[in-house]
Amino acid sequence: MAWDSRRRAKAERLAAARAYASEKVVQTERCKDLLHTVIRPGDRVALEGDNQKQADFLSRTLADCDPGRLHDLHMLISAVSRPEHLDLFERGLATTLDLAYAGPQSVRIAQMVEDGSVRIGAIHTYVELYARMFTDLAPDVVLLCAARSDRDGNLYTGPNTEDTPTIAEAAAFHDGVVIVQVDEIVETSKELPRVDIPGDWVDFVVTADRPFALEPLFTRDPRHIGDVEILKAMIAIRGVYERHRVISLNHGVGFDTAAIELLLPTYGERLGLKGTIARHWVLNPHPTLIPAIESGWVASIHSFGGEAGMERYTAARPDVFFTGVDGSLRSNRVLAQLAGQYAIDMFIGSSLQIDRDANSSTVTDGRLSGFGGAPNMGHDPHGRRHASQAWLELATGSGAARRGRKLVVQMAQTFRSAGVPTFVETLDAVDVGRQAGMPLPPVMIYGDDVSHVVTEEGVAYLYKADSLTDRRAALSAIAGVTPVGRTADARRTEELRRDGLVAFPEDLGVDTRLATRSLLAARSIDDLVAWSGGLYDPPAQFRDW
Image (cartoon, rainbow, N blue to C red; front, side, top):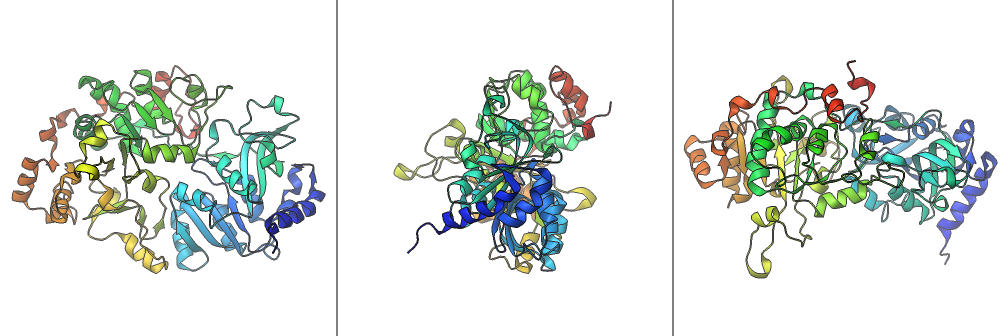
């Protein structure tokens, strides 16, 4: 029996590709020839489509390859966010897709799944997909991106390291081929600010035709934060952060959590909460967190990835952010997801739909957006053993079975745009999963993991419920006039308020008259720039000057 078949197969691919490379360096115009030679029909190909950064030169080049030579590829793409990611399937190059998030391609991918041009392996969390690259989804070829490389393949990823080291390692140590597009190639590693990935993990580097694509995914313009978002933020701060003394946390992306960040230096300050909540964060460098950082609220932030325009700011705040000797941010999605799973007291995020049992999903009718990292951080990890005040406050059991619980908070407005209810009897994901032939409905966060739900109506403390009936009653009490909310019984709601399972703004001491934009620490992108002392350099689409 041969024990080195993968190694011999890789050696054959590399030998065939030498015609297009000078040692490890491939000329830009020969990249398609390289891909035609190195990738084989039926290969499992990991394409770096991260939350923010994209190996877009390699994805565009792959999508332009000849389907007569490359076909039946099994694509592993964590964030399917570029048109060419799906062009691969329309052109017949790929057939199967394993992903974590689809974002702007969510409508198109739903249509392609329906018409059979894309077969979904599974919708994962980020770390789940990467973990499978080390088990049953080991890639044959990986296509990555970095800021710079030397001629030996040593890589500098800069502020946007994200998933590159993890995907590279999955291939490099199991005889897959590692190809990296870079913005610039220098002669030696001495010309790199630091080495983030060693050259012996890398087989080929190619200078891209333009810098790799970088999306400001976590930037929210304060101008779009309205009174309802501010009210929800006030309710969350008083009803969750203050009540449970949440010290370590993750904020999901969105205007709801951006409002909380901008209320910490104002509303939180009035409540005397600085130093008692929201100290340690697992979070991308949210621009809306700048006022809280500058006001002394934040002790540390470890990031999944960078954020366009925040490079100089993070470099200037090394006590807060994890940075390298060169001053640039060191992000790492897998390690941040691990911290978000085990090391924080609370995850708080939003969803597109929530059912009467608090199951939630961003997969709705005609939209297959995926989950990203929410399911990983939005659950109570039974493997946690260290204690904190917030974790112990939700403790259950007795004796050896007694353990704490992570706060998993869903924050939602009762109705979305165009009057679409957020709270529904049955998630669209159930039908979508059935129609797509998925073995399970694509639920983002399961209801039994959800400890709190916050709306503009109040807070449902689901962790206090002794029965499913009580959970449903508590949720309906703060679900407004949605299909779930209309099942609420006024007398039962009063009982739940008395027993502490439901709290309305007045129960929390929230003065709803204060819920105006004047409460925000910054009301525009320009205000955020001012708070940063000019260090924040917002992307062009967020500038109005």
